[in-house]
Amino acid sequence: MRLALREVWTAFRRAPGLGVLSVFTIAFSLFAVGLFGLVAYNTRLALERLEERVEIRAYVTEGTARDAVAAAVGDVRAFPEVASVTFVSPEDALTRARTEMAEFRDVFEPDALPASMEVRLKPGMRDPDMVKSVATRMAGYTFVDDVRYGEEWVQKFYSVRRAATAAGVILGIAFALAALIIIGSTIRTSVLARAREIGIMRLVGATDAFIRAPFLIDGLLKGLIGGMLAVALMWITRAALTATVFAFEFFPAPVLLLGVVAGAVLGLLGSALSVGRQLKRV
Image (cartoon, rainbow, N blue to C red):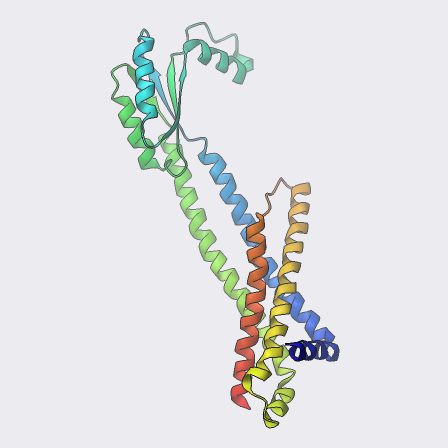
């Protein structure tokens, strides 16, 4: 291991420019993938926040006994899809309307708004079919006058979500493949620059494992440093976007660690493939 590390350092001193170029190529390739991932991650968070607004509202017929409504609230709360149920009295509805639409507060008269049950569903159970199923069951209560949940809005929202997910997967794979090709080509150039050295080592009887070791370590270190640089560039970009456009959430720590590890793995694999091809030629 010590000898392999010494070979890596010697190779870097001989051609520092090529080594730095390899590191920055890996960094910018991973940065491009990471930047797309950052946009996709924030898009997903935004869609999740919108999804939390999915709500079913069942309007109660005037004059319905509070006990009947309370029993219904308990029944609906027991639905497996339901996260919470809130009973909104006519007085509460009036107060809310006057607060949310202050410019029209004088228009709303006492008892002008009906009582209602507001239902929010659990995460993962807010797709159009689930929402419609819960709304249909709530409409079955005799004292429920009307049930609304923005059916058209829910349908459009999930269509946009499915399209965004599909586009994210396709573009993510495309970016990752492009990064892999660029990184592989860069490391291959580095290996080819030492093709003569590989040939001499083979002539003096060095084993394939002995020849590969310095290149594998070299690729691993370059990928590791490139991954860390990519994370730093993403952080700077995220800070700039937050300051000039709108607030961007950054990746959680496990994802950042995964990005650095991905850089190291790509560097290692690129070196292994490139030096393997070169060994077959000598």
